[in-house]
Image 1: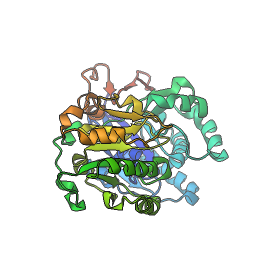
Image 2: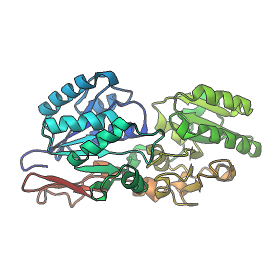
Image 3: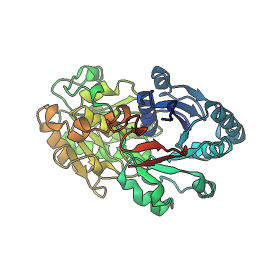
Image 4: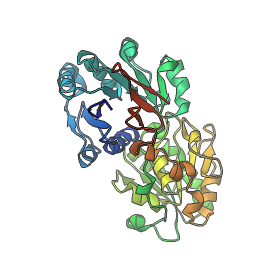
Length: 391
């Protein structure tokens, strides 16, 4: 914070549709300490399903409603709104936000600009335009925030970001918002009985999430445990193909595709095992954090920052990416375990989740030093008015 007012933080994103990075913003910004921070959010495109969470958290937000073909108009709007808000720091995430936001920050003379990176790699090759924009805007970017240590090789080796500009800040959730008791009321509507064993996944139905491999593993688990049910929470372009695959594997009666849901916390309580089968780009998944906060054991592919989150055999199981999820052993083992959430409520997921980090102040963050302890980093305003960050 400054000597006389909170630090103004503007977050610029493409939109707030359902996704891990979007949920991160929708949960983090409403919980910032208003005595130290004055947050605001701008969506370049449409609002998205998570946008109402900002209003509920009293965070000023604006959706410009611009499309990719309206880049000039979007830039003009961003410059105008940025000058109106007059932020001390602009945080950008997503290609159009990273490009247009940083240009707007320069034109509006924002003191510091940060790019928040939520991926460990690319599902497609970066375009020449994006590589050019990244190189041109690198000198005016104050820092690059990652969410997992596993991102560092990608950020340095692939994106050529100077190591000195990289800060790793783990995602977090609030454990107090989750009930580890295991209430199954929310899944009763799917015809799941009290004796069924439930394996659940929370992820967009996109290729990189590799639900197909999970369904093949489901076939093996069901052969061994006929009472097993699979709850696929989320929606996306792969849904039709995955539903067809479930039918071809003869497991359609054991798999429930719920579509997008707003009662994720309740659905987690009905699961015996939480899984992620992604083959790439996972960093520090919000869905996994939420499952751990709910006391669910996790079986996940060892990609990105996931190994930073799971203690093998204690809070869950890691499956090497080369094997993926084709062995049912881990899922079956968790399903056979008594429903004892306390056994699996990990210190990472509940006791020392970075959650509280995104909402609570450290005792070290006092007015004397004018510092704020966020997730696992500090933002400090010096005498000269400069702002810098470190882990």
